[in-house]
Image (cartoon, rainbow, N blue to C red; front, side):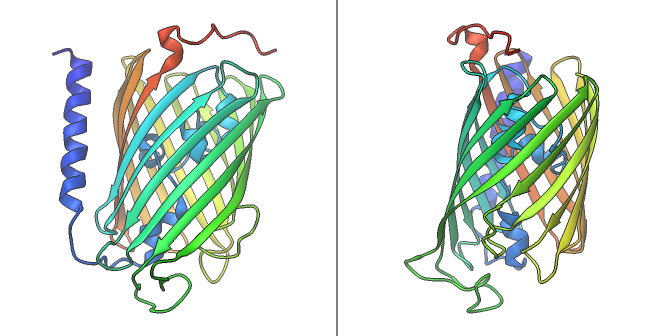
Length: 322
């Protein structure tokens, strides 16, 4: 078996085993906010770098991150993700596709279904996002993401009948729209920065937290480091901050190796992360994980697989955008 196929097969088996092991358990002892993860969708790259990708994120990662990253390169990707949070008793499955080849206006569409704490909160969500990005120049791109969230909760959390912890059996707690906006600027080939605001319609609650932040990235095609910081205005009783740092090295031209760190001021927690994968011109398989080392005990494990449609010749050849 070729080494790329063996890697993909073994990684898929590992994720399947982890998901199966965490599917049935007692109710979660984590606060709902930690298990909910602020409503963020994480693919393997995002989890492995602890979310430090507001400047360097691209491809389908940009559907759930900074939408301006969709216009970073002319590509057509489709992919799927699976994630588990063992202590939170949460599992998520999603699909996404993005195209910046067939039009100067790059577009991405993603859908993720999640279940959290089926023996406690009984929370289920469906997250649909449409992201668009326009490159004003090779150095500057702007993006918008429209977000639809359906969330139903039939159980009660530790706070009983409250907006964050209470449930509405048989009825959705939320069925609303919001939007994100992002900007990416790359003054040179080796330096970029990005800013991102999420849920800018200001829903006013932690199920759709309004945040604003940015990141600075430095590196080359084979190596980069990035540092991000954001302010969360609505999850906790006061404005809190999260700080993230991440690094990625492409070993041998095919194997991304990633590390990250996250400080969460709201949860008063510290976490470290890492990941690896295999990437070739036609597809990629990637695994990312994050683990708290101080504060609430939680783990995130995410598997992503992508197919690069532009490599098949099914789309027209990319043309110069400028």
